[in-house]
Amino acid sequence: AQKITQTQPGMFVQEKEAVTLDCTYDTSDQSYGLFWYKQPSSGEMIFLIYQGSYDEQNATEGRYSLNFQKARKSANLVISASQLGDSAMYFCAMREGYNTDKLIFGTGTRLQVFP
Amino acid sequence: DTAVSQTPKYLVTQMGNDKSIKCEQNLGHDTMYWYKQDSKKFLKIMFSYNNKELIINETVPNRFSPKSPDKAHLNLHINSLELGDSAVYFCASSQDYGDEQFFGPGTRLTVL
Image 1 (cartoon, one colour):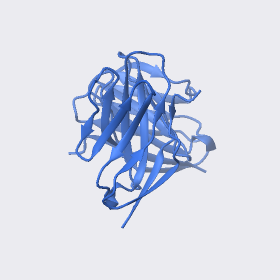
Image 2: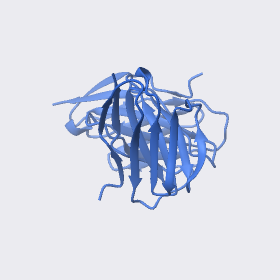
Image 3: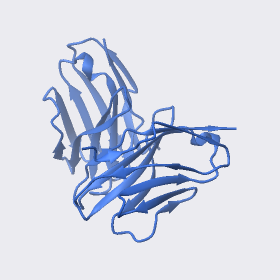
């Protein structure tokens, strides 16, 4: 079974609109972490946001927020006020357990922002 | 003042050759990683080192050998390169277990 599932291979959004990128995960651990990374066409991987399984509040970082629904095992990324520079691949990743550094990545969603 | 740097950025070589990719981080992090991103953009961990000690080895062929001379460096040596080794290889580092990982710019390896 896939540990991290990103069901949207591609998404389009108009500039200044909000967009939600879906991510569901599968784990039996109580302690885990969820991450989102951005990969622009230039290829680098940029860390965006982190949510711990015990965090009660949804994580936010500027225009990025993570809609964490633990019972549904989903960790969707919300980008508000999209900008042209947000066009990129977005990867959801999970760290299972507490004392581990192994990240498992989803297959990614390609976001295109149009004017 | 790049945080995680890799050299070279591009590497084109013939099948059967041996090559190395170097990685350095100046963040003072204790843990470093190698990931492989295939042509379908799927990213998978290969190795992780914590303070020069191998922690994770994800059933990678033993043609791949990571070497960590100190905690700021983690190099990847690949023997007898095969066509299937063509990919983008990313180095990353994190302060400690479970912390966010910071990635290098990637090395695009093409095996002909």
